[in-house]
Length: 169
Image 1 (cartoon, rainbow, N blue to C red):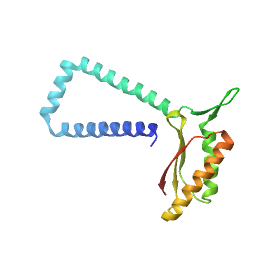
Image 2 (cartoon, rainbow, N blue to C red; image 1 turned 120 degrees about the vertical axis):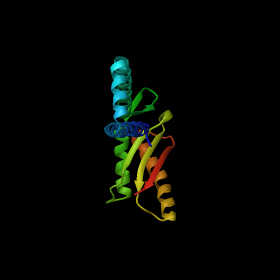
Image 3 (cartoon, helix red, strand yellow; image 1 turned 45 degrees about the vertical axis):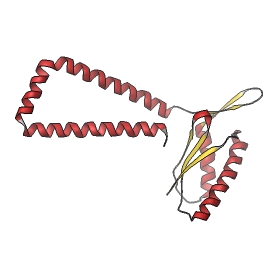
Image 4 (cartoon, rainbow, N blue to C red; image 1 turned 180 degrees about the horizontal axis):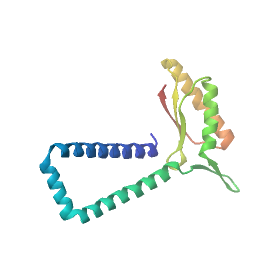
């Protein structure tokens, strides 16, 4: 799973729990008059500092989300060092080459495919494959290793190892 998806999932989980807790608190206030009075008394006496603390916390979470979403959707490049200069290859171009190869390997299949650059610009291809027998699966993965490696080397000059993360469709 990509880091961006992990961040989004964690934030989604936290927001969901917060909404559920708010709903449960609101429903419990309907049944418990003493809790309503205590909450009103607390807001009346300590309301200003409580609202400030909540405001600071919400603003902090908002800024962290903004930074997280920026990091999740910024463009990523693969750098190729050449004798005379450097070349930057956009992640979407790599994804297009891999997607074309994948559609030729499994024609007629609509399979999820994503490409990510990890640490030290190592390429990770995240995709699905149709259900295959164990011996077929091994042959397909060996073929992908050879053919996709050659395509990436010829088209964009990527000669490092790449990781193939697969789940069955």
